[in-house]
Length: 203
Image (tube, rainbow, N blue to C red):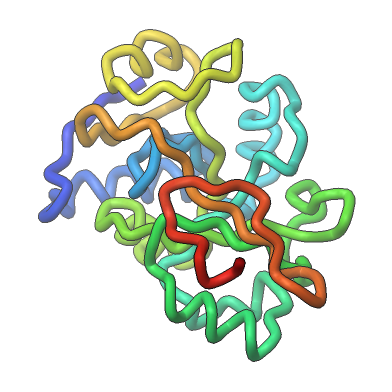
């Protein structure tokens, strides 16, 4: 695994370009978000998706979301009502995962049993730069050990995942607080997990 340290506010463009090249070639990266580190790949690369599922012990698709650079093309990947779009626009970018009905464009491997997907627009320049340069969403799942514990220290992550992923973009030790998960796929919003993002709008 190649290991690169980036500046969180002014990430080195050459490192972003290198990570995007890895993604386009079917590789897997670890990268920082506004909550925890994520393991990511291009959502349209089946081989890379299979690798991530293997790394996560073929974990449930409920644990997967994908990172978009903004809400501009969100209708390509999810079915969004006017009220859902207004709520998301008000809170994003930010530490939220929004559960929405999946659009046909999204690989079915990433659908939950309820045919939904998780959408993220993190408030983190490195994550946004990656998704912007790639040109389509990045699959994202939290970096955890075999016990399911979230890993936030780059050195520990490096030691655990060195043989499993192709590149890591490091941004220091992150706070161990995951995104808030809001389900907008039904008639009324449902708070699935209260994490880093304020969920008072949905109470």
